[in-house]
Length: 419
Ligand code: NAD
Image (cartoon, rainbow, N blue to C red; front, side, top):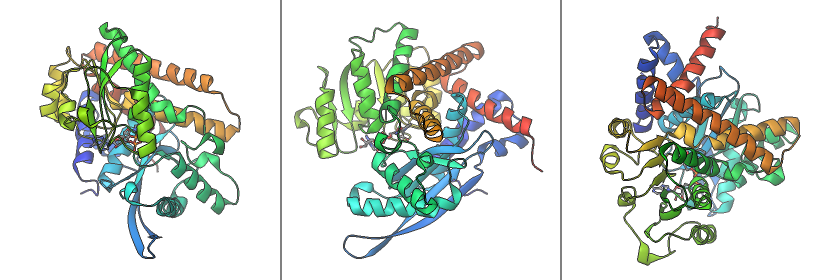
């Protein structure tokens, strides 16, 4: 019996079983690796602007504490439940281990549509959530960051709330803060730029010229918009983009700078150019060199995977591809080069780690230093994944996850089981 249910956790569990079989992990060690160490559920009451009281459910899951504190984003979305948060925490663990960060994975969230709250209500809810979490988090216990539906402002409210209770400014309690409040240069762009950097490495592997290549990006928030920009800077033509409000496709190429300005002004893509509106699911299956899912989980199922017409699938989102779709993509290995999520979107947590280190030391780096250190880490992880996949004839996802899982398993075995 487990409290971790639902399709997203089922997916994390199914992926783990594939890796555990491949690594020949003993049956009696598997639960210890997969199931989270801790899960906290909180009720967050707030005053609405109309004077009524509303209560929102919040969660935080800390997957393992073997390698250091836990680290992970906070999601504000209607879909959030304990299973989704736990799955995201598990993926964070493999991602941190793959990139060599001294963290276990964590994730948190609130079941809420943040667009349905006023700014004042959003601040109340953010502060109340952090206040409820204070007994369970800390700079050396569990460090939060942004995810879908949260941003630098929410992180600033988290940091301020935690600091008020400590009686001193504790910038290192969250990452992804504004630079003016102890954040690091480059964090906001880190995930999307990492997607661009790794896509370029994939292009080199398959002999695809970046200049003139075409790309489609699903999701136009932090990750998707910066990834689109980063690919455009490499000479790629972005022919399709979508978010939860609109979807556009134009084989002649889209103006990413104009789309970014529109999204910043209006909060979303809706209303940009109705004459190029397109079906969002069909968008994923249009011909392009690079497809970047950068929105949410499970958008590429087996049916979509069979019809993908991209050469590179760069997974900016967490968990965009279902295990059934992986089976299809396994058959299409020569056609579609997959950059798996725990590698492709790792830029965010790597620079979050840099932010935490800078905050702890109160010694700050410039953007060029942050980026060069980021690309060094991503380059190394990419090379390790490629080498493992080639050595054992496994998919890139299996290779990436196996490196992560094995590091956690080795650390657990060496530390032993207390008492
Ligand atoms: P965000 O809230 O900034 O943006 C999410 C975007 O996805 C928005 O444009 C939204 O409209 C769009 N979207 C939501 N549902 C959609 C749908 N069904 N179809 C199309 N678009 C949809 O979030 P983000 O930080 O950019 O995160 C996006 C993904 O990347 C998530 O899976 C997140 O876990 C992952 N991720 C984020 C970071 C980070 O640093 N922010 C790091 C690693 C991974």
